[in-house]
Length: 150
Image 1 (tube, rainbow, N blue to C red):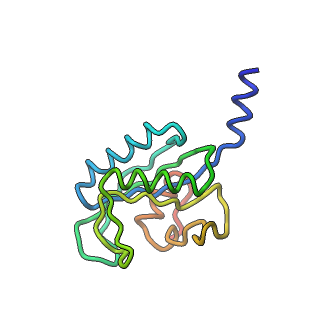
Image 2 (tube, one colour):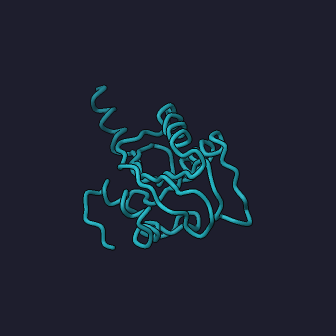
Image 3 (cartoon, rainbow, N blue to C red):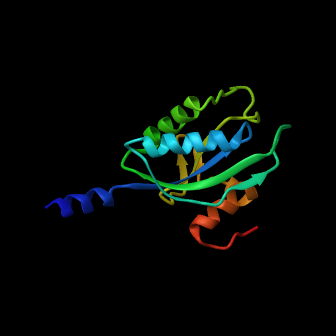
């Protein structure tokens, strides 16, 4: 019975990819963010890509460190997104509503939600940046085990 319940729960898990990035003390902030994700009871990290360094896009500042993580959760998109934003805040992230191109302690962006194609809460999925920006596409395709299309 326990095995059946476990199998049934697994079948309803959302699988999604999250772009992780930082250009303010990135080693410490990414480590702290991943630690908070690991400690959260409702989300699980399944797999992590390698770490990649990239120049800032659309702004001046220090280079970013990025990776992509494959995650799963029984929570819906809005709940997961809220959880990730809360973790960003706990790691010192301050959002400027007038300028998205600013340095940041931690960025956790869902870029692929269950392979869904379309819009969720006004965001397009999969994220178009996957094919436009190597700092998004390279770690994403590494986890997907497919060749990059750049």
